[in-house]
Image 1 (cartoon, one colour):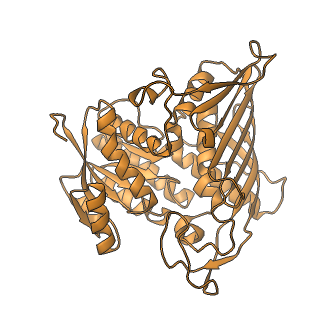
Image 2: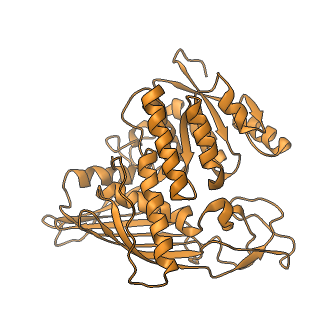
Length: 402
């Protein structure tokens, strides 16, 4: 694409599911949004030579490599986009920040609180030293309906928040013979459904409510303790040739917990990848003393809004979030034409570019992502004590919930 806009040169680490999404986002963002910098797909880093070369050609990356250190060391790279399993996030991010690069890191930020703390400290130092931007990829914040919900809550439309209830329900592991993936290996993923999808619910809830979770009482369950070795990759699940050749599952299949927020709200959370029939039901409802807001990603272009004064006789109103005045939506199609999952990542790329250019769009930063990590750790600790009454408080942190 011919442009006189200064370039922003991207290196992306990872060629899996998130690699596809991020590649499309970097390609699409400048075509629909007026950006102060022009993303350039400069270097793709993978693990397998043939697959990495094929992915680079298909997605439009100018060059490819098998060593992420090359990306960190090159002078013609401005942003490191980390789309790898959680066990590699810290090492890559610390090296990138030390080299003066901007960083976008997929969620959850790390596999442990200690890793997240070191990453947050490095991000703070890099910001002070070079102005580096460090963001975590909680992409659901970029859903227009949720961004609108955030605006309405900030305006006081639902009043004092009393209840937060969030569910993230998937079913891609419902079959006990669905093959093993890195997401089922604690050493690589950190946790299972809790960190993979529950982290999104935690971030969304804290961000919408403008409050932090301070205590939890939790239960974790693993329903299938081994799965067939995967022979080929197809999306999240893949396929297996021999169901008798099994690997151990070392993470949770499902998580459930109650939570207390520092603003007084009570929260109820559930995350599972074994809810038969639920493909990607990322739901949240927030009840205040003046109204409520509800959202389900399976109807991602809709927001349910209830005003206790105006809507008492009719209940929730359905708002179609497809109008030009709605967050992000006006850059795309004519009014009434909906968006899809891939658009969240384009919006995320837009916000990264604008943050690098100095605009206040660089959230969530590593400090907010570290707060999510503390909640994940608190949930695990509570569940480990096997007491529904156990409450574990995350440590206080710096940073806000913008």
